[in-house]
Length: 194
Image (cartoon, rainbow, N blue to C red; front, side):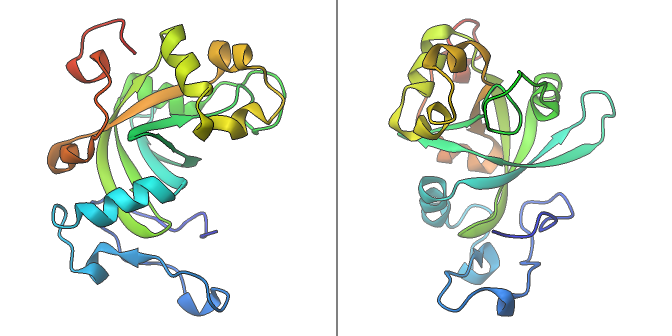
């Protein structure tokens, strides 16, 4: 696991801020886009591979009340090319009372954010979040094999469908080509499809 404060500024690319000598021998070392010779648009293959294998990211949102950048470490899930950020109804992951999420409130107020990969490659991608509200869409996400961990935390599928925070992620700007799964109105902006 990387240090919590791995990223300290907002930007498309950032240098590696950890000491590689502290990684256990034989550990895979993350690479930066700089090390691959990538420019923000030149190495989509490496980014796509990270979207398939990585799990932990940082998101940088704009505070709903403060209008200041807020960084949150969180998991994302790739369901057949559809990038999702979701959680359990309780903020700590384990079964418990439903909790308000500041990251979700921030994304509802300001859906544009930075999606920062930090495991196998370190790059910050501009993105837009859309809350998944339709029960059928929520059920499809929470019943997918890729979201088994959430069901293993003691929640029924119905509880996750009713109460879990779930957002679709669509990459924007030069990274829009990374969107391999088009999700109806989540992309075209009409109401009701998410």
